[in-house]
Length: 368
Image (cartoon, rainbow, N blue to C red; front, side):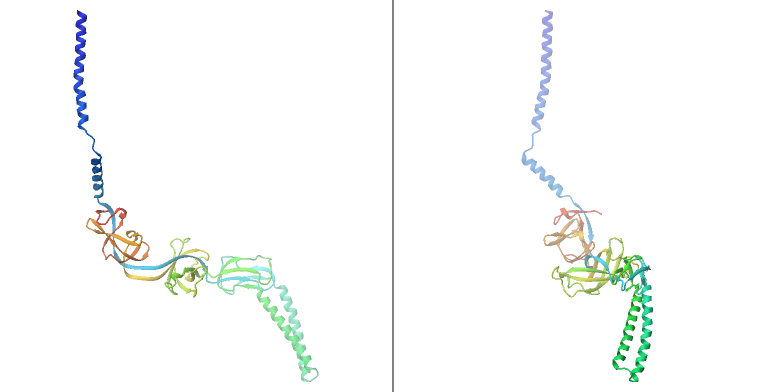
C-alpha cells in the first residue's frame, strides 16, 4: 500500500508540472500572432517616406557674391627664352693661341680682347715687307725722275709704280692680319662657350667663342592663326619662369610675323623683356601671358559657381532658404574669377560649393 501511495503522489506531481507549462506555451503563441509582418506595399511606402524626409533636408552650401571689377583677357602660352643677339666668334687669321683673356660666364663689351694669337711670324713678315717697300719707293722716285727726263719709257715707269703699290698692299694685308691676331668681342654680351685652349693652332674661321647678349631676352611664340586678330605689337606681356619661383618679368610684344606658316598654321610673335639683373637665361622654359583686352566694369563671380552642361551655363542664386537656377552668359576668365555678361546682377548671392545635388527651388543651408 505504501508503494501505491508513493506512485500516486508522483503522478499527481507530474500532472501539475504539465498544467503550469501549458499557459506559457499559449502565451508564446499569442505573441507570435500579435507581431504580424508588413506587406510589400507598406514597406515601399515606408521607404518613400524616408526618401522624402531625406530630400526635404536642406543641402549645406557655401555662397559668394557677384561683384563689380576689372578683368583682363590674356593669351597664355609657353616658350623657350632666347638672347636678343648671339655671336659665334671665329679666328680671322692663322696662328697659335698664346693667351686667353676671358672665361665662360664673363660679361664683356664690344671690342674687348678675348684671346691673343702668336704674332711673331707676322711681325717678321711685316718687317721684311716694310724694308722691301722702302726699296721700291726709292726705285719709284728714281723712275719718276727718269720719266720726267724722258730717259725711260712709260712702261718702265708704270712697272716701278706697280711694284711699289703691290708691296704696299701686301704690307696693309699683313697689318690687318696682325690686328686680327687679337680675337675681340663682336657684340656686348656674355661668354657662353669657349672652344679654344692654350696652344691650339687656329685656321681662319676656326670657332673660338660663343657669345650672347643677356641684358635683353626674347620669347619666340608660335601662335595659332585664329588668335591673329587679338595680338598686336606693343601689347604688354608678363613672363614667369618655373625655375625662378615668384619672379614675374614684364615685357611687351616686339613684333609679329606678317605671314602664317602653312605647315603648322601658326605665326611668330616675339616678346621682348629687359633682364638687367641677368636672372633670365637663354634656354629657360617660360610661361608667357599677353594682355590683349581689359574690362574695367565687369560682373565677376567665382569660376566654381558656374555649372556647364553641354552648351549651357548656369548658376544657383540664393533666395531666402531656397535656390533658383539661372542661365548665364560668360565672358573672360582670369584666375579664379569669370565674367558674367548676362543673367546676374551686382550683389546676387550664388552657390559656389555644394551645388552638385541641387535642383531648382531646392532647400539649402548656408555654411561658412
